[in-house]
Structures are given as structure tokens and as C-alpha cells.
Image (tube, rainbow, N blue to C red; front, side, top):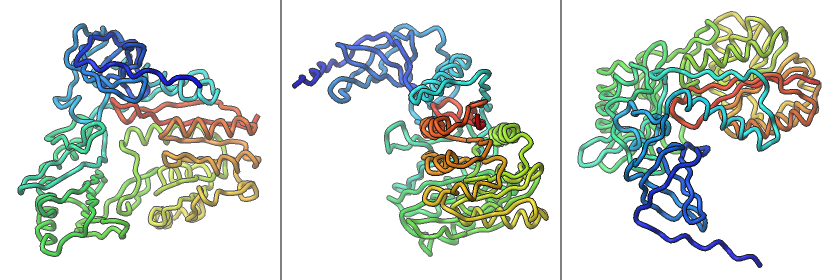
Length: 431
């Protein structure tokens, strides 16, 4: 029986040279034959770190001093970078950051023996574009802390500003703090989801407890003073309750107004959404009958309806209801059909897929494994896959490739700036 590797000795501090960059953005070095993962360090950095054991053959290292900086290290623009866990890569020059992100996508695809196609495009959104965010908030000793968590921690880093957010979300931070102060008792916590819409900010408070009756009127007063379009409250598994509805939050997809349900999914930036829509429209080509799976409120359904008849399917009934109402209002009933269906539990079978020239799917992070298996058994000639998770995308892509499809093009979108996240749009055609 082979011996387990010896536990490396713990040293208060040690000087290391970073050799590589990991998938989560950590610098990687070697110490006593073990890997050391160092957050906020770059290849070429010489750093002095405090070590903490991570299993039998690895360490994590906390930077105490940068002895020698890598050539591509830059000054992070955010004053709370390395404290706030929202960004991992502000310290890296943008050309190298973009190259690293593309390399991570290529490495993830390679785990499934998938080669990057020629001419892969990388689209990067600008700072200040994020129109939706989820803040953590607590109230203690009558004081509110609102911000983002530290990396791998429940500690909240207080925010007075954030370079990622749109001006409207940045300006809302004092109002959100006031709302939390009015709504919560001491020792309570909540997450605050805020979305910028055409009619104003849509706020959803996610709490473990219901809104106390004595807190309702103070919350309403703060919401009206801030001119929020809507404030809703959700606790546990109960249906969200609208507390204030000054205006219906609306978004425009393909030129058509859609009323957003409470807590509805929305792409995090307008520019990112436009890039995804453009890639999908180019991908479907001249298809005249399209299934839009995991359609949400119609991000792709409405733009696609300008060139084809669309069947939009999603498991979220409020989203499908909003899509249906918007399609009827726009007199698109003949162009867009809708269906509420859980595609993970009940994917469209081959017979149901027969009428379609193309299928578009944009699943949650878990991917669309069951639906991909059904597509392989069908004769659908064209599949456009949208993904926010390269790992689940690679699994689904491998199924499609093994089932007779060919990967024709790939677009990489970076709308989670300064993070390790990437979104993909891939076009598959039957060989």
C-alpha cells in the first residue's frame, strides 16, 4: 500500500515565486514539493506569504508583502480590492487578464477533449455596466452593514461605491442602507437583490423571517423617498410579497416591453445581453422555426421572433406568464408560443423536436445534460448553446459532438469583469 504524502511543515512566513495562475485566479507556487495557492498573486511575483495547510499536499498562502512585482501587475482601481470578494483580478493588466480568461475556457474544454474552434471572439464589457447585484446586509446595535462578502467568508465588506455597478445602482447604496435599517430588527440579516429597469430600481429583500408589521410603514416610506419602482420581500420558500409598487419594473427585449416578475433572471448588463443576442441571432442563421429552451422572460425569444416562429419554454411559470403577456401585448401571438415545462426533468423528446430548424438553449449553471441527450437522438440540424458555466457547457458539448454535431463557432463573453467567470455562445451543426 502506498504511503500518503508527508504533511509539509508550517512556517510563519516564506518567500515564494509564483509560477502559474489557477482557474480561480490564485497564483500557484511550490514549497517543499507541495502546491501553494496564493490569492491576488501573479506569475512572476516574488511574494512573502503566511502559510496555512490545505489538505495533505497543499497550502494556501496569504500575501504579507510583494517582494518583487510581476511585470504585468497594475494598481487595482478599487480601494477595497483584496478585501471584497467580488473581484479577483483587478491587479492584472487587461491584455493578460483577457488572455488568461480565454486560456481558462480552452483548458476547461480540453478536459472533455474539445478543441477551441478557429477565430474565437472575446467580448469584454466595461466597468460600470452591472445593472443587477445582490448585496449582503446586517443590522447590529442599530447600525447597518451593507456590501459584498469577503472571499470564502461570511464577513461583509461595507461598500460606499463599486466600480462594477451602473450609476443608478451606485447612487442607490445609501437608500438601500436606509431601507435595511427600517426593515430589520437588530441581529437580523438579509440579502438585497437590486435590478435597474427602464422604470426604476426593482428591489427584492431575501430574509429568513417575514417582514414585521411594525417595520412595514417605515420601509414603505424609505422606498417612496428613494423612488424605487418596486420593493418585494421573500422569506424561506414563501412566495415573494410586493410591499411597494410605484411602477411595474419593465425591460425591453427585441424592442418589446416585458413586465419583470419578482426575482426574475436578467442578464447582468445591457451590453452583455446585446452581445449574447447578437451571437445567437447570427448563430441561428436563416432558421424559420426555433425552440428557445430555458427562455426566461424572453431575452432571446423576442429578438428571434423578428426572423422566425419561436416556441419559448421555461420551468419558471412567472417568467413564462410575463413572456406570454408581453407577446400578446405586442401582437406576436402568431410568432411566439410559450410553454411552462421543467426541461431538466422532462426534456423535449426527439418527436417534439422534429418541427424545428434550430434549437437555442440557455440553462442555469448546471447545464442542459438531459436536453442535450434528446437533441443527439433528434435530427435538429442546428443548436446554439448559451452557457454561464464552461464546465457544464463542456459536458453538454461533448454529448453533442459524440452525437454527430460539429462545433462551428464559439463566442466568449466577459461581463463578470475582473473575475474567473466566463459566458459562452456556441454554434453546433449536424455533420
